[in-house]
Amino acid sequence: MGKGERERERERLRRERLEEEERARRASRRRLMLGYGAAAAAVVAIVVAVVVLATGGESEAKGDAHINLNEASGLTNGVPPDDRAGTPPPPPRTTDLRQAARKAGCVLRLELEDEGAEHIPPDSPRPRYGTNPPTSGPHVEPPYQQADGAYREMPSEINLVHTLEHGRMEIQYSPQLPEAAQLELKGLYDTMYGATLLFPNPRMPYAVAATTWTNLLGCKEYKGAATLDAIRAFGKRTWGRYGGEPVEAFTFAGPTPADPEE
Image (cartoon, one colour):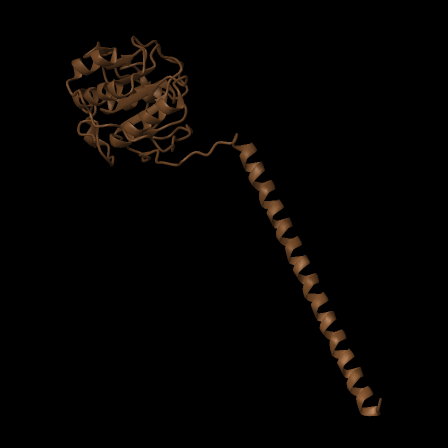
């Protein structure tokens, strides 16, 4: 083999060696990237597992609590808002109040005795109210009245009674009510939330109740659409018409119980 042939052979071998080294480097990079991907996936899986454990494995759609927070309408007083997405209600079938209350199996008490409207400090003991839930009586002094909105916990009764004096309606439910039923009430509230409150009430003897100043609708059972119809009709009959303060005196937004969206 001549000198020229030996040089060409050495050059060929050198190129083959360089190509092999390049293939090895590429394979190493691919393995490294795959390792990074697997590690990232593991981190994501861990984060998801932590979130699932922290939330009890549940995912909750967010809606709007419609809190009307201003000095005129009142304060939240530290009560957490209910921003769950409600279930849209069906169109009403029964609009006459007494008929709707009867179909839903609810007690209807209209124009009860007015127990007064004395203002008391926010740290006052609970007054003795004549109805449960209360419909009138001594209540907290301004500006501690409970602001319009949906809440996850029950506000103080003295704060709630003050809102009734301002023509508001309050929709209340037992915290033992199934989640699906709570979301149906929240969906109804979403159609009539102007100057209205929604919250759980563990103290009352009803599954669902609605109150305005000196008026009470109390339902021992929740009967779905029939109960929703009774609340709608109660709102149209009593919302904004009772109490020492006209409901329009305190600004609010959205549909009202007198003319709820359908």
